[in-house]
Image 1 (cartoon, rainbow, N blue to C red):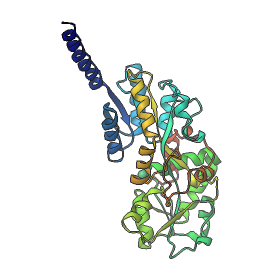
Image 2 (image 1 turned 90 degrees about the vertical axis):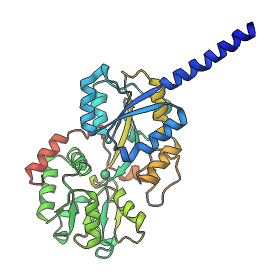
Image 3 (image 1 turned 180 degrees about the vertical axis):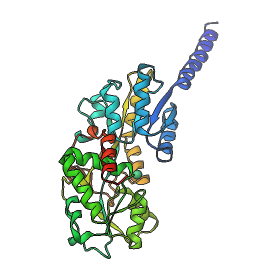
Image 4 (image 1 turned 30 degrees about the horizontal axis):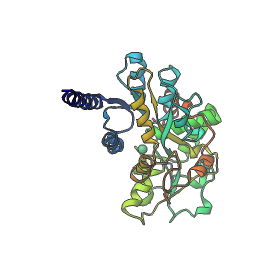
Length: 332
Ligand SMILES: [Fe+2]
């Protein structure tokens, strides 16, 4: 009889355990696009048994949704495409503080000082060029050199692109409104050609339309993946130049979350060697930890940190001011 009862009890316990495991579900608001992050989310589900529901959207719009929903938000985590969106949510006190064990995994400049979010991958602004038409030693050392008449009609940029706009926001913070406006006007007057986004800049460099371009670092790497001899190269400006801005995607856990433990498991997973390697190999982004096999196409993390201008990435949230400026100078 006792044996029989123990049997029933253990079946009951197993069912109960499975029951709770099944009920575990995370809701992520993701400003990162589905095509970019879905495989790694599925991998997390497979490894942990935790189901993940994702609301995909524009980073700034999701931040606004979180501010409106406040403590009633169904979201457990906010995974943003840029630090500006994370900063907005953090400022309203909606994030929990992340444990030191997580924060210490990423360099200081890739997390905020109050410890509510950490970067999950990085992307750098670079100087792309045609090695056929520009010798490496003749390359401009700073974005300010792009106003030189010798580059007249030879530069390509993408003023409508979010990453270009984040770079302009950084420039406003680094050198001020006036100098940024003057730079935009002078490069425009120097015949800079506008492209709708980054990939067409790379193609225009290969096609001989332009000789220098200002894209994010990973576009050329994608072209090179299918054609290793693709006739475009890229480099950085002098260390600290605004043109080398490294921006990050990052994540924080929300105070309103009822699945705090699973949320932290997800953050830890994104910083694991496996997930970091995924970002490096599949999306050619920069890792934010050094737990990965370095990619020969990417400069090492410590070098990257020296190249990027010193800037609190959270402050890159005044998109409106940047759009106003771009309209004022006739670039939008
Ligand atoms: Fe991009």
